[in-house]
Each structure stands twice: as C-alpha cells, then as structure tokens.
Length: 223
Image (cartoon, rainbow, N blue to C red; front, side):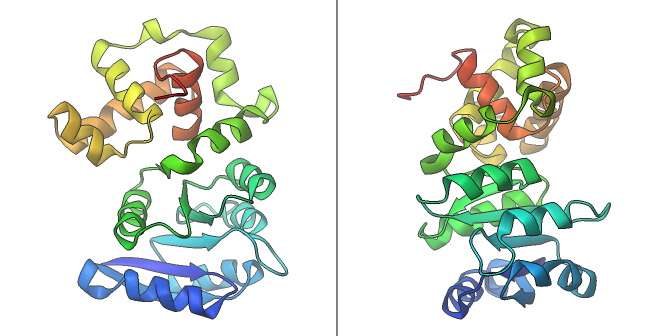
C-alpha cells in the first residue's frame, strides 16, 4: 500500500481523491489537511509515502507548505495539484522542491499514475503544464538552477546514445514506466539512466533535465 496524505481546502476535492486513490488501487489515505499550515504536523503523525498537495489554499499555499516540509530530512515527496491559472504559485512550488505537477481535472487513471510515479521516487509533469514548468524553471536565478550550470559546463554530447534517448523522452513528459515501454528496457534500467543523466549534466532534478532537453533541441516545443 502507498500511504497518502491529502491536502486541499475543499472537502469535496478530498472526497473525490479518496475515491480515486482507493485500497483497491493500492493506496491508503492516512490523513487529510484542509490547509498548508497543517501539513508538517500531519506528516509527523501519519508518516505518508507521498503528499498530494493543492497549490492554492486560504492560509498557507502549497508552495510554502512544500518549502516547510522539505526542510525535514525524512520529508516525503510532494505531488502538486494545479490548474491553468496558477503560474505564479506553480513557479514557487517548483523552487520549493515539489516532485510532480498534476492537473486537478485529469482523469482518475492519470492521477493514479502520477501518485504512483512520485511515491516511487520518480517525478511527474502533466503534459499540459510542461511548457509552463519550463518557463517557471528558467525564471529561477542561475545559482539555483542546475540547468544553467549544465549549459555552461557540459553538453548533451557527454551522454551515451541510450541516455540521450531517455533524456529526449523525459523532455516529452514521459514517466519512467512509459520510457521503459517505449525503449523496450526495464524500468529499473531507466531509473539508472536518469540518475546518470542528472549526475553527468549536474542537474538538480527531473524538471531541470526537461529544460535541458528543450534547450538543446532534443525536444521541439511543437512536439
């Protein structure tokens, strides 16, 4: 079972997420919060494997709640729920260390996939918000952006052919499982390649790798 903490100021949204993230699908909702200021204490009490976090809440938004949570050495990964009008807070959540971004109105199957991917240590970008995440990441000052350092010091030529393949598919928003299926390799092998890519290019996280893929034309914006 994947232990989930739900954070959203709308009870109906939390109820909907509970139905989607059911025991039948391999999830256990171990706690709920109605605002970001409740998250740290709830994580201490419930010990979730992942926090599914609304981005806009009344008192403490998802970005600030994520920032506070990431100060803990044992912090679980955060999957942020977002909508199309959240650019400013989306950027803040990215800088705060969120591991994934999922549209609230996505189909249930997509939400299940994103929660599983992030809970397993991966990252997730809803294809519909990829361009906005790219713009948000590029707005981070150079000293905080791994992609900026990589562009100055390294090139895509430092990667093997297989790593370039993986990086290009990451840039298209594919999860590790989808990349494994596309390249006919094991998912654990994809995770190994992703780790090598981040290390070789001195990138902070998957979002930085996606930016790198776009900036080096491994992925075209129209694609």
